[in-house]
Structure formats: C-alpha cells, structure tokens
Length: 298
Image (cartoon, rainbow, N blue to C red; front, side):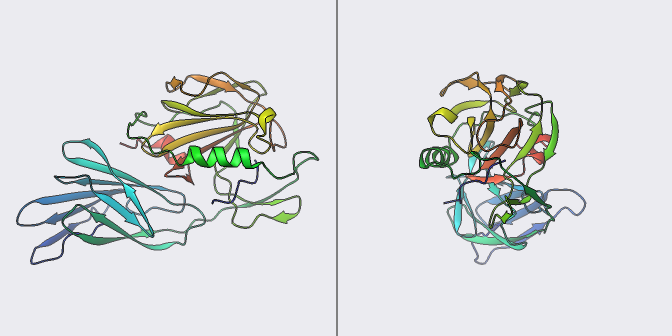
C-alpha cells in the first residue's frame, strides 16, 4: 500500500431561561440528547456513544426549520435531510486525532450549545515493508490533485442503503490504521488509509455500495502511487477508492449498484504484489471501513 499524499460539539443549543434535559442511554451504542425550549423541542442522537479513533460519528438532529450544522474542532459539517424533520451529519475521526473529549456543537438557527463526547484511544500496529525499485518513488501532482478533488466531493444525494459489502473475496492482509516504515524510513503522520485484500490476480472487485463513479485513474496516465484506480461517490461526503487494479470496467459518470463488478485486482502503482486497497472517506478523511460493513448507517 502506498505512502499517501500528505493531507493537504454536540450540541449546543440556545442557552436562555429554558430547561435543558439530557438523556443518555446507558447500555446501548446511541446517546439521546433532548433540548427543550418554550417554542419547540429538539432531539439529537449520537452514534456510537463511545467512539474510538477511526470511527465515523453519526449525529442525527430532529428540528424544524433550516438544516442544522454540526461543528467538531475547527470544521463545520453539513447535515442532510433524512425525513420527518430529521437531519444527519457524519463526522470523521482518524488515528492522527488526539483521543479525549470532543466538543461537538450543533447550530439549529436559534443558538449554539455543546455536548461532550469521549473519543477513545486505539492501538495500531507497525509494519516494515520494502518497495521494489521503480515503485518506491514519489507520486505525481496529477494523481494527488485528482484524488484530492475526488475526496472533496459532498453531493446531496444518498446512494448507499444498509451495510457495505466486501469488495473482494480475498483475505484481509492489512487493516486500517497501521503505521509503517517504508524501505527503513518511518512514515511520519502516515497511517494505512484503508483495508488490503490479497485476492487472486484478476479476481473481481465489486462496489461495496451504490454510487456514482467520479474518478478513474490509470498508471499509464501518471497514477504512479495509486495505480489503476476507481473512485465511487456514495453521496453526502462518503466515497470509496480502489487502488492497484489490473482492469477497470466502468467509466466516470456511471451509476453502479452494490455488488456490481467495477474491475479486477492487480498490482499497479506502488504495490509489493497483487492486492486490492479499499479506502473509505468521510468528509475527505480516511476512516475505518470495517464498521460500515457490520453496521448500517442511516
């Protein structure tokens, strides 16, 4: 897996003479927060209630009026209408974040208040790999610029439905978040941004969820690190990327369904051998794809 390009609260509600009721479910993975005002009541769900590094945090807000926004750290994230006056935001966390209390803030138009969520630490292994001559160089501006543009997509439509599928039948050889030494040099601020599958050369790669193909990259056109690759926009800031492919069966603009073959496994780009790298982005950050395969994100 290549060394990637260096990557270029909750709730606060209007604080006045109102009653703030916070109800947190103790034994389930969802925190329920209720904010009441004389004019209206707002509910918000946070899942998981105790996230760890790499998790995607789902925030569902029930409120009337304009779509709320959710702020974590210095970044404000949009919410999307999921029906019945409910809006959902997805917030990414990564191994490079600092574990501890996250101040998540929701702004529903009449004010801002904060809910603190505990982000748990997580241990990630370290690996040493050696790239062969010719595959140990730097990537090109072309591939990094195009991949960065792909990761920045936040389309309003939600294409996925339910759990994400496994993109290849091969054995998982490298998990998410692993730290690496490349040819004896520690890759600072690097973590493995996805999951690797050591399937047979030429074995099918399928779309883990429905979406629109928004990136096609080819080794012959300068994708020296990513190799032949496909990027699928699943909607609302969620994207998949598939690297090192031997064959690409789709083109930019295609709508694909979950389970549809999009290409074949290979060893193009900066790869030590045939394998598939599947990366999943949320709001431009590489998050752990595994929870998306075991839990449905509304």
